[in-house]
Image (tube, rainbow, N blue to C red):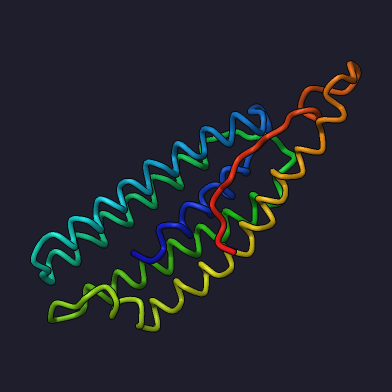
Length: 181
């Protein structure tokens, strides 16, 4: 279903928030673990939706559980204490994650008001669904910036043997957070 990848990218971006006790690599690993749990939960919900007879009540339950996965991921990401070098991106990421959550909450309310069973394709064509897509587009753009920040750490190879440079300035992080082109 739409929004899983955007949520994943955003969650990785949001993990950049905090004071700075984790290294970039540690925070990346921990953030990706939180994201993986959220993605798995949403993928399971999608698979259950596709494998069972849709009902209005099932749609409401789907959205309750999807939002619960998003909220728990946000809480997990907020609990991380990553390096300060990505704090500015983190603030933007937190804002976007909050906006994505609010947009999905509005969509859940809209779907909950449907009196007959609808297919997910109809959910995303509502004004609320379009609002989710607009936030996802912003997330995609920020994801590219965040990936570039990771990729830039590769240039630190030249500093790896310089003893007086702090370890965090020599850290190389190779990760593909899965940004859409």
